[in-house]
Image (cartoon, rainbow, N blue to C red; front, side, top):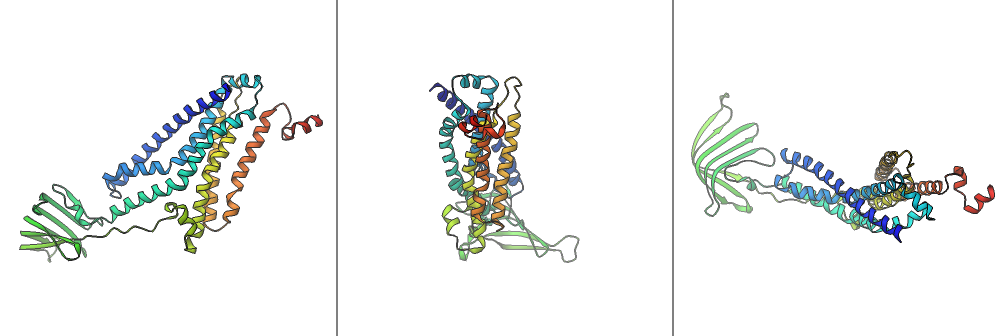
Length: 373
């Protein structure tokens, strides 16, 4: 049918365009935030691109939900504004004729949203946390780089090596500063080498250098000359942190034996399942919400759409917090918001079917409404 083909084509192009715009905004925001973390030493600058990609994947379900909702609104608002809806209504179609084609277009995207929320969201969060934690737990071995001042993870030690021969494990022009027990110790030497020690660790051995200990203004300040001075480079095993509820898989959320984590796990599962249901509710609400008087030609529907989305998403997050805190049961929090969205969509669609009738008569079946007249 021409009507369904035109609707599907415009929905596809508009959804893709809106999604690209939202992804661009998201990536720009993530670049600013993650580069700020890298500048503060919270993450490795070399991992910035990976972290941006993982964060974008994690929020892909939310972006698709918003894209689908906004695309339906934009297409129908334009049809109303350009009087195309009047043409379709004059051809014998009604607003209820939009429900089937729009749902057939939205169903595959809603399924993708569900898969992203259930599987991709926790995986992306888990990988981002592991990358950040491993950088925080990095060993001092990673600090050894020629021509660079490198700081330890706890900012208690600084190394500078002008030249490094990896094959022969030789280093030249070494500077090592360490703060311990409130005292500053600085060692410098022209040559040295890296050696392995027991337990898998490493140390840098400085040859024929000087060591300055303490503050020059204090009486206990010392200058020592040494033939050989060894400073350990601590090697730490990266410990994977325990996953948070947003990083757990669906099976981990369901089978977690910890009773303390039961409510947060249920709340997280409630949010993941609620996201595709919210997408469905928003699509149905968008059909009647897109009505625009062609004579006025305004876009007040977009204002109401933003308001509806903010209320819906905040109610979903609020329900998640209540379930996480144990204030309400997950069975009670799972359905009221989505049921309310479906009721609102049903009432608004009924109101648009025959706007000449009073609002309460629009909710009655057609035969009963005629009898009332």
